[in-house]
Length: 320
Image (cartoon, rainbow, N blue to C red; front, side):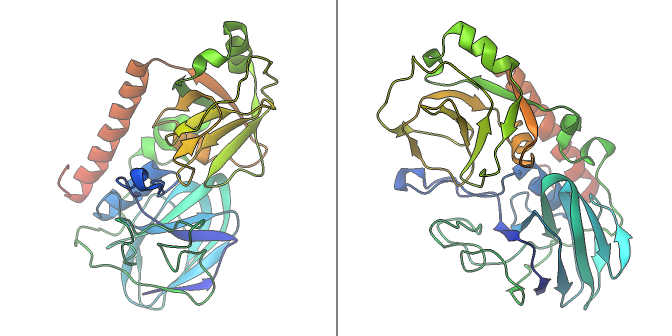
């Protein structure tokens, strides 16, 4: 068991998501930064999509009731294990009674506390992650609170204390992407809503991540678009990463808990690799959009998969 001894402002159990329930109106959910979740898991020898604690905003602490191996992935954090400073991206050995304190997130928005064996909460609709709007999954379908007890699953026995992520995976985000505010997007089904000059304007703007952004959607302000060509549309299916244009010119990027249908024009879609880059942005940070070709997005996805396979190979986990 893991005991929550001091809960941060935002922490909940998340996994790789529910990928077969959209026809029932259930969004995929899962980690907002699935790549960081998978890095932490494969470093421990877990299934890549095993459940972990998604941690954001403020500090807090966890106590391990039994021996465990743990790894911190995602945002750069200032953390201590039994009072000793510990790095992210490395397998840590926690003894029974050990306390892991996350003092603060120094860079990035989301950290993942992964444990060998995963967080063994019950599956609901094919996933273990929390879906807050409907109050199911995870630990009681809610944010974690002080005193909560999280069961640990049976480890695969592949975790090795001291094992580290390769250098290219140790930053806030994969493949060194934390060094640039650029977010790759592909044209969406209604990209024609914007005339070419408005597209040029959009791609040249520095957009601001709104403080109201959450697991359902990230709001980006500052586009200053001419929306005279905007027209109301009927609701149509929408995917994670869809970039919607609202009548006031604000952009809303649908995230993992976003609706499965949308009524605003879907002018673009954030690429699979770039979506975690956006999810890691804090309120008031600036981003720019970069229009890429499908071949470029696919190449980035293949590079990301190759990195995961290299990490898995270090633990002896089958490269599946």
